[in-house]
Amino acid sequence: MKFNQFVIIGLGRFGSSIGRELMQLGYEVLGVDRDEEKVEEMSGVLTHAVVADATEENVLRSVGARNFDCGVVAIGDDIQASILATILLKELGVKKVVAKAVSELHGRVLERIGVDRIIYPERDMGIRVAHQLVSPNLLDYIELSKQYTIAELNVPDCLSGKSLSEVNPRGRFGCSIVAINKPKGIIIAPTASDVLAERDVMVVIGTNQQIESFQHSIGQ
Image 1 (cartoon, rainbow, N blue to C red):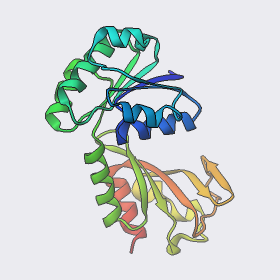
Image 2 (cartoon, rainbow, N blue to C red):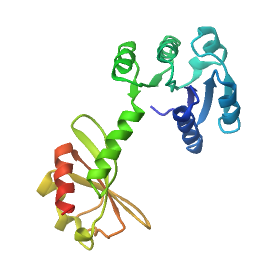
Image 3 (tube, rainbow, N blue to C red):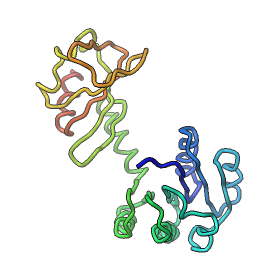
C-alpha cells in the first residue's frame, strides 16, 4: 500500500525528524502537539501543524485524522497520552498506525491495542551502534525479522578488484549481495561478473549468522 498523507502525534525530536524526512520525500504531513512552541517551530516545515490535544476524540475528528493513510504516535514523555492517542487513531479507522514505545511494557500494551508497527528508537539505535562498533565494515543494517537482515558493508581492501563470482558470498556463506552502491551510481541485482572497488558499498541480505560469517571473513 502506498501512503500519501501522514498525521504525526507529538513533535518532539523523534516526531519532528520523521516529519521533516517525509516532507523531503514529497508526502503531505500534519503535525499535532500540545506544545505551542514545537508547533510553531514545525509550522513552516510540515504541510500543516496544529496545537491540539490528541487524547481527545473530538480534536482528532476536527483535524480530519480519519482521512490520513498513516498515523504516527511519537509521544515519548507521556505513556498514557501515547496509548490514548493510539487507541483513538485505531478507532477512527486510520489505515496504518505506527507508535513509538519507550519501554518493553509500553510496547506490549501497544501491541495488544493492535498497532501495526512499534518502534523503539533508543533501543534500536543502541543495537545499531553496538554492531557498528564491533564490525568496522558495517555502515548500517535493517532487521527484516528475528532471523533475516539487510546490511550495508564497505568493500574492504581484500575484496577490491574482485568479481562477485570470486567473492562468492552465496556459495561460501549463504548470503547474497543484492546491490552495489558505487560512487557513479547503484547497481541493482549485480551479476557474477560485476567487480567490487574500494569505495563501493555492498547491500547484503541473509540470516544474521550468514552475514556475521561474511563480515568476519572480510574483516580479517
